[in-house]
Length: 356
Image 1 (cartoon, rainbow, N blue to C red):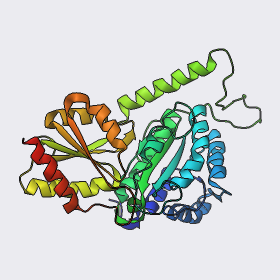
Image 2 (image 1 turned 45 degrees about the horizontal axis):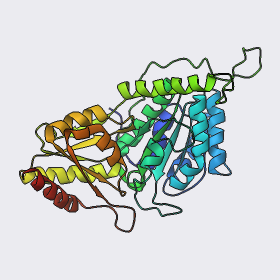
Image 3 (image 1 turned 90 degrees about the vertical axis):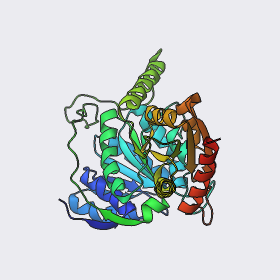
Image 4 (image 1 turned 120 degrees about the horizontal axis):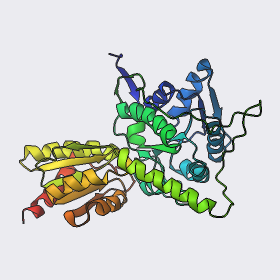
């Protein structure tokens, strides 16, 4: 067994990137994610890697695009306003089918906002925040261990589907410290990068682009991307369930709030309430089939988010008429994290309504 370490979530993500073979990082400082570039600025040079603090977030995402086009494993990271600035480049990478990993340790907004824990970037990350009809896989860890493991998984997904992949955390997950077991990167069969640009040294010409001007070319390319997203929906959904088998009420939450909800559900069970927890780990593709099955058994879903209601829309689309959906949100602000006791009260109210 690997040695247990005590590290921050941000550091765990950086460690996972190094273990996954990432040797190129481009970024710009912004709280609460600056531990990631700090760690990689120290660790990449001894590994013959490259760390570049770009002149801006826009510069960083375009450096990632360029490194990715050569077939290298590369990443960037930022927090919410910085991710907004990267959206054009993310769209270009999705259109050119370039792999790369983007970490968003989100902060509050809109606008400059602050560094409070927030889940208000859900729409931006999951629905394709840049121009054009595209999606990218979005992974939502809820522990330091998952920051490490899912970062490695993100690099494999990126190469498997030739797509940018985002890891979505917040200041709670990024800044807290927990035990971490730095396991070796899982072995996964991945396609050869025969598309990668290698230069002019006698090699065949390779063109990486998102510009398609021939008659019908762009439409065909968009249908190709759409088909790829459907494959992701069938093969790459990840979710976690807790006490859902006999539940009459399912609490749904992702990321940091799912940890609080887990405690509240345990407290509700101690009071005799049949309550369970459903946690999406992939926000895109959203685990709609698994949620629909759990919701149909229970009949009611309570969605908890650190915003005024975003993932709840995907929950409603997933369960349809099979279950009633209610929502409890806490938008960013001082003391925006709900306590387990606060969520227990909300659970109690919703559970009593199921008995009427």
